[in-house]
Each structure stands twice: as structure tokens, then as C-alpha cells.
Image 1 (tube, rainbow, N blue to C red):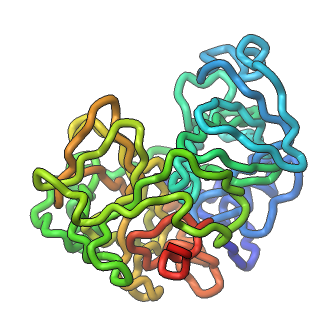
Image 2 (tube, rainbow, N blue to C red; image 1 turned 135 degrees about the horizontal axis):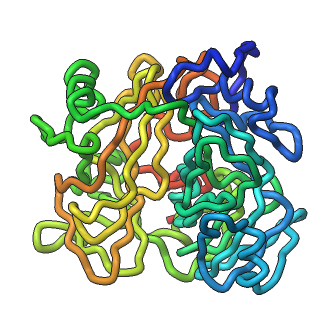
Length: 390
């Protein structure tokens, strides 16, 4: 997404509790809270997050790890690294392998502010599993309040090998000042007042730890291909350059999943295969909120839905030309075949208030939003299926 905005002078002490938005993130860069090794790039700051850029060095490692309290990522790399790769001019990260990459951005957070990360939408739709790691971390994807130090990215391509280079953006970082999460009752009221999630037939939704989303297997979402319910990734496809949008035909990388592939009332997910499906419900994120999709919940089945979990303010808003905007589900079954059925709850959306409404929302004219008004949509790297050589 490319964003153009007027510079707003904000002092850190003026930040209200909540998820910090673009003007505040800009202020954090100016004030040395976010410390980029090279200047911030155009479009790197999103309405409620900042893209993290890969640095020049990547290490192939023996196994995923967390550094643990009192240990740095670099300490662990001395034991776990197999070899170092210079990606200054590009390098292929092979599927099935695990890597640690240095990140261009480092942090010096105040004591009341924490960071949390997620893969970018396009990263998740390529089945590239990536997680942020900070020094001393006991959890992935987090930078504790007051954290000062470097950031790293664990990267594990699961289906497609990918070409990356210094500056490639695979994940996004959000910042939370204080405690901003809202209660189930507050989320119910927001659902009733705004219609955060609408359609799909889940009236009287059970809002516990988020608003539920269900899967659409009707085959009616993608009008250009009636009967299409999803896509299944081909296991032996070519390399994808993560920095090249609209560069690849669909057929060499994906096969269609249609109504004809359904059985026993639903779609059987094969273990170790990757699917792109879509929600029955349409999603709206108001200008003063951001949303995150929970990636995996054992209460709804033995599968993971949605690697990439950030929804920016403005996503799905009709006033921004969104119309009916679905949530795309990146789905992978665990260990055993699993039957997923039409209307089955697969994940939940958690909304949090923003500290400040950003001047540019997701889907605003000129914002470069790739997934506003989306239906059953593959990553931005692929040509539209109806124009590809099928």
C-alpha cells in the first residue's frame, strides 16, 4: 500500500491508550523510538502499522527457536545457524527450510508501549510462515513494553520457494499503548451498532474472544468462475519473487477447488496442503478501530486459518468503495484430514480502539490498497485468474 499524508507533529506524551496509527508511528521514527538502519521507504507506514524490511543477512538454521529471557537472538545463532546468506542482491529461500533474517528496524520502546507483529496479507497467501523475534523473547511476534534492541524475522516457506532481497517486506508491526483490548460485552455492542461482521447467517453471534467468521463453500462468491469455492496450492511449483505484483499466471501455482470437490457435506482438507478459502461474512473495520484475526483455535478444529491477521481501519467500509468485502482464509490442516463445512466457524476477529484516527484509511483513493472489496482473492503476485492461461 502506498500512502501519502501530511506530516503531523505529535509528542509521545500525547498518545492516548490504544493501537497507534500512522501519524504516531511517524512521530516514533522522528523521536528515535523506531530506529531504521536506512530511511523509511515510501508506503512503509500503513494506517495502523509499519512494514518491517529484511536486512542484508539471513541465516539458515537447524530449527526454530526463541532466545529466552536474558539471551539474544545472536547468542542462539552461534549454536543454531548452519550458514549465512547475503540477500543484498536477492536470494531464494527454499520451501521446507527455516531461516532467521535481520530486520532493518530496531526499537527503543517507552515503558507503556508494546509491539506485536503479523505476516502481511500477501505473505500469508503465499504460505510463507514468518514470525518476528526480539532479544530475550519468550514469545514470538512480541516486543515487550520498554524493549530496546534489534528485531529479527523467522521465515519458513511452506509451499512455494520465494525470492527475497534486502528491503523485502514480509511482516507488519503494530504498537499498543497501555491496555486497549475491549471486553466481549463491548464488542457485542460494537457489533450491534456498526455491523462489524454482517451476512453469512450467523445472527446472534457467540462473541467470545472475538467476532466469529465462517467459511463459504457455496461457489457463488467469485462471479467470473461459478462453482469455485477455493484454491489449493500445487506442491512442486516455481519460485515466487515477493516484490513482483501481478507477475505470475495462476495455473502453474494453484488448482481450483470447486463444488464438485465437496463430499460428506463439506471440503476435506488434506494434511500438509495449503488452501485459500473465503468467509461467508463481510467484514468492516471502522475508522477508529483496527482488527486482528486469531490464527488458530483448537475449539473450532484441527486446522490453522489465516496466517496474516491485521485488518486496517477503513477495511470493508462502503463509503470507501468497498462494497461487500470478505475475509480471505489461508487454511492448512494439521496431522489428519479434516472436514470443513459450509457455515462452520473457522476463526475470530478481535477489534481494538485506535489511539488516533489516521488521516488516510485503508481503501482511500491513492492508498494502493490491494485487498479492498476482495472476494476469493489470491496474493497480489498473481494475475487475475480469468486473464491467466488456465
